[in-house]
Length: 152
Image (cartoon, rainbow, N blue to C red; front, side, top):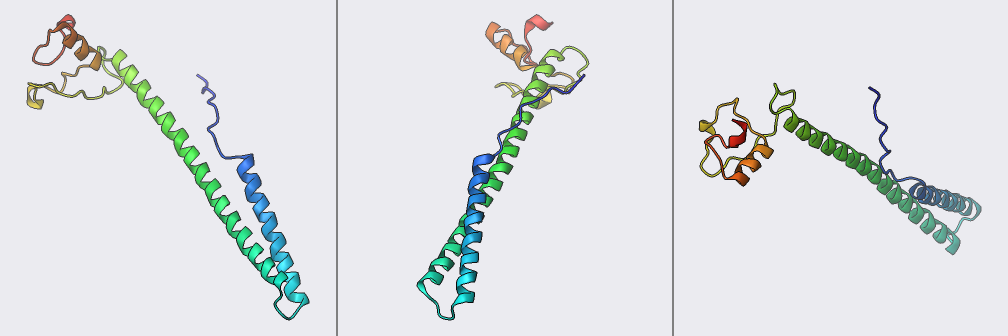
C-alpha cells in the first residue's frame, strides 16, 4: 500500500528569509562603507562613526533575525512531529478498541481503576476497554472486574 501524501508542515519561508537577507545586504554595505572611510581618512569623522554604528546594528539585527528564523523552523518541525505522533496514538487507541475481543495486535491502554477495585483483584489477562467500562456504568451493571454484563 502506498504511503499517503501528507501536507508539508508550516516552515518559515520567504518573508523571514527576505528580512534576514535584507539585513545581511545592509550589514555588508555598512561594513564596506566603514572600510572605505577608514582607508581614506586618518582621523575619525562623523561618517565613520555612522558607518560603524550602522555596521554593528545591522549585523546584530541580521543575527537575531537569522536565529529567530532557525528557531521557528525547528519549532515547526517539532510541531509537525507531535501532530503526527498524536494521530498515530489516536489511531492505535481506535484500533485497540476494535481488536479488544481478538488476540490483540495492539496493546490496549490501561484504564483507571474504580472506587472498590484493586490491582491485585485483576489478573493480567482481564483487560477491558474504556467503551465497555462506560457501557457498564450506564447500565448500572458492574461486576468485580468492571466489565459490563452484556459481554458475558
